Image (cartoon, rainbow, N blue to C red; front, side, top):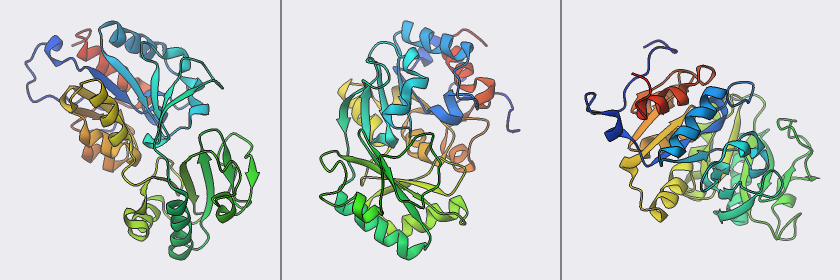
Length: 295
């Protein structure tokens, strides 16, 4: 199918009435998925999200973004107002608005594991530089490029940032970021996973060679599964959307899943269906169909 071709059904029973296909929970990535390339939420998508909530379907934003970057969707939360941030490292209550988000659940990366990751990646991929994401802080090495629209709290070697007496040592580490200026992004991911093994979970969501490293077993999928279990929701009642490798586990876990028309090939392979691109409101297209509003 062409990249922006028609939506592919993710159900095995295409004749089933739309009401019977309604999930109990929709889990959607943000960048490259729910958001358009200009980082906006289109009016059509806003309406679809509101309609889903009105129909009794919970909507979870599930993103690699830190909590402080959630202002882009904080005006569109309904009901529970929870989001899964940092690739599963935190569940955040967005009701308070930007700057007042409350951490409901934190799944941290132990500093010893993080230091092991830094050591192993420095050996496997010389030239790798690091940043450290904490609940309320962001720190980076001096050579780490300006990839984020913010000023780091500290500029220090990763070993100092992750030391027991390092900056904000009382705050959990949610993830570390590893950037390489020359390696192919997918090759860097494969190399890092081989080098790190089970010490941490490694993924990526950037078009550049930027890896995101979380605690062992921490992913969008595993934290989403915990949130669903707390609500008595089984995976068959979850519909998920994504576009990059950090979405693969979530799309594989969910009962139904959709790769965006702009998705990475690994995401297309993992999902049970496909929708149009983020700039064409691919999430809204599927939600409308699930609610029986179109087609």
